[in-house]
Length: 416
Ligand SMILES: [Zn+2]
Image 1 (cartoon, rainbow, N blue to C red):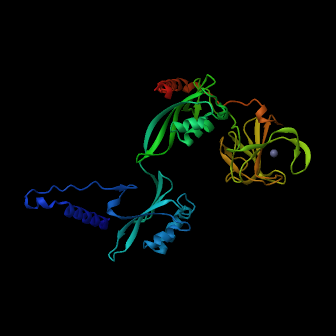
Image 2: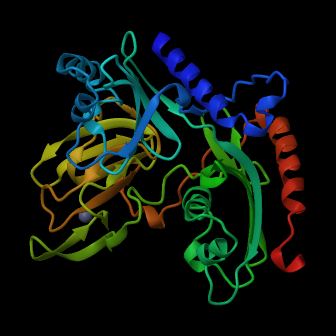
Image 3: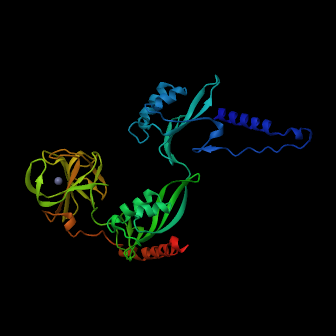
């Protein structure tokens, strides 16, 4: 700490010796000494350190970097052991990510590492503070959150994503709206010219640069002259989106157990089996997806089976309630912690796509039971999620009305 102060005073002295104008040297005005605003980087007074910035190169470990800055191997070993198997494990530094090393000079003029900063992404970074006792923690750069409104009308030959992009909406925002908020309600591949939307959302900025989408506060979508509203609301369990009547937009079941997948074989009473080379029924829906793609439980439930079997490969069976059970076959791997008795949430990863058991290529075979009978989920009437509870209804309606008012005054671009 003492050394840092010395450096600061040296810098101050240097600043004043440089900045005193020569013409004034004769006058007797006493200069008013004003310390410059400290330069804060990653929460530290950067101007009291020598700061070296670079990015992690491939194959470069934190140990290697630290050693170049005079940190002893025994100290490096201590850091490695302290962070092992935590989210700050120094073995997980990724090539290409920026880092900053805050150093002070020792008496021999060598730079000594004091603090190491590793940027996980544009906002989050990890601090390894070697001064005194080792401290490791995650921190965030100060992010500015702005409430943004957008409104668009889908033109002939365009899509929701293209229209959104033309308004400056990020792909991620469009994805949240189409794949997360409305995925049970609307099929965005079938939007029509004249369909229109409004959205109110938080955008995160770092030093003036857009760095990500925050909460989506309200959405209005008009498809074929029908209104679809979405308001996020926390009603007991977790945040869900509700429509203008307080109905949950989320269904009891997810539409698919894997993201961005393609149905490679539908449920059928009679199909030609590609491996067994014979006609038989296929009481499941196959979703082809790259090996390792996370497989989600399509609804909340309790794991009933999680094991390997000759034909099913690694598979998991989830009981959702007295009526519904689902099963997921051919996993490359069952997810950590998934075993009989484990409670899972809708959308929780229970395994990863593979081709174990009787399978030609990587896919998940999704099986669905209703009252003990295997059925085609696409042809069955499935339950909705719970609507707004009676306890929360008044509060929800007030909240919905205030958001609706904000949505209603957003003009469509043609009305500008
Ligand atoms: Zn199958």
